[in-house]
Amino acid sequence: MTHATSLRTENPFHNYSARADVPELFNLNRPNKEAMKQVIRFLEIIQKKKRKSVILPIIAEAGYGKTHLFHHIRETISDAYVVYIPVPTNPNRIYSHFYFETIKAGGAPLLEYIADSLTQKYNKVEHAAVDFPGMGNIVIDGFFALKEPKQAKIALKWLTGFDLDEETTNFKRTIMDDEELAFAALKIILKTVDKPIVFFIDELESLFIALGPEAELQFLETLKKMHNEASNFIICLACLATLWDKILDLSSTAVQGRIEPPVVLKRFSKNDIEDYCCQMLKEFHQKFEIALLEGEQAIWPLTKSDIESAYAYSHGNPREAIKWLAGVIEERKIPLLKDLEKNQTFQAKLGKKVKGVADKVSKYNTGILYRYNGTLTSLSNPEKRILITIPPLKGIDTIFHQSYWKHIQKIASGEEYNEIILIGEILEPEIAEKYTIKCFSEKNLTKDLGNYLRKDQNNL
Amino acid sequence: MQTAYLKILQFLGNSGYYARTDGEKIILSNLIEKGYVQVKNGTKNVFKLTSEGLKYVDRELYPNTSITDQDFLSCLKEAYDSLSNPMKPLVKIPDIRKKLSDKRIPDNAFDSRVLNLHDEGIITLQTALSKTHAVHGGIESNSGTGIFYFMMFEA
Image 1 (cartoon, rainbow over the protein chains, first blue to last red):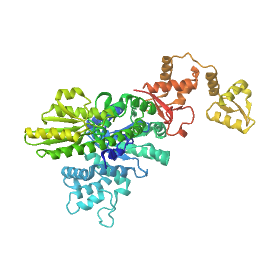
Image 2: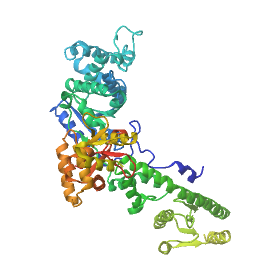
Image 3: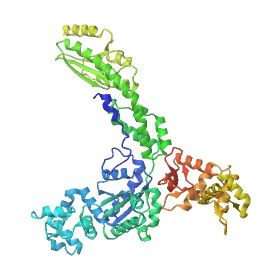
Image 4: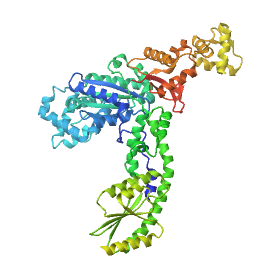
């Protein structure tokens, strides 16, 4: 597969829809700055024990970055555990859903940590009994068993939701089927962990859409109970802005009273779109073998007018803007890939000739590198290093030439090579003058370059 | 076509208009959904304007063209502030429209001014969940991304 062929699938804007299981590459601060500020503020309040729990709605239109915000919170905030909670499909299994998502996020280390903390604090399970009466005792038993070598395996299975009826008589109830038990387990985790937990509930409106207002109401009432009885957490309720009113209206005043005023995510401004493009296109430029671009070129192959159009089309909706830009990139890529294919054929043909000549000059070791869409042939022996370089094909996008010359300039200003020979025409005369680059035309290349190198060899 | 019927209904006042054909009934039912028309009490097919319909005809027939951008923005802000609260920062555009109906700003002028304010970043418009959720009174997005149905002032 040629370089140009492999680039056909490259598009920095392909992933315009965030997923909880795919990390996001880059965050623009402005649109979610307020939301981050609020999450950090409430975390501080919880850490200082001024409040036990907070329910913070985060509302925005579809595509404004709610799921992206989850990634940003998880990557930025180190003073809390961040757990992604997809909306449960069954409104009767909410605590077990919270519990298992927490275990999924924390994994075995979380269970180990809780078990260690509990055994260190209470030493014997009986000592913990008063602090965790009722259902809590069953869960405590499970965590203590996790530290018993003989029972650890089965305790781990129980804590992760296995039904152990046939394996043991010790664990009669299963967390999976028992909401009370799941809630008790969740409360123990929240009480024991060293940092608060941020539960990020995504697509709060899904229950409302899929199962109707009653399911949503039930879900919100469950959150209220959790808010009242458990501690050390923030629940971020990410919800479509346009359904927030309806959800709020159907919830009881008791629920409403426990919910903070919502934070609204902001849309992209034109500058945001440009900053986003600059960042996302960096890797794209590398893949096209283009040196770091600055100023207006930083968004190549896009232009300022593309940014304007993306904003006008999307009205600042980040997902719509990115989707639109993905389409533009696909269109722009077609001529660029054609240019690169032509250039590759040209480089291969001429490169072969240069190598043929160089190989005939026995005193040099030859190495070939394709860099910045030009060919760099290095001839070296203990006394001398010569670089023979072929610039990109004339007539292809100027960015490839600019990028190549930037690279040659960098090489020429260093001391790595004693001499630089260019095949073709110098498009940047001042560079040739400054660094004394010798030129050979493509015409009679084999003869002229061969004679020059042989002469040079004889002088060594 | 709907505007023509609204004008006739305004002319006929309280006596109302008797719809004879199915086509007329469809048009008038549509206007009922928008809240501009109602069936006259005690009749089946006699229609008359609602107070909202009267205001609509008034602003479409005698539009206030002299309202400046600054005045429009102040009116919009005032209407928004009266309808929003910290728990519900988004306000339905039809509600704002209603609130401003005495200003006699024609719907087209209202839509384009609101879209401009959105593009300038002064307000944020948000689309309805789907076209069926934006029954009437939203603003069709000129880029086809949906129907703007909610608005808020940028913080």
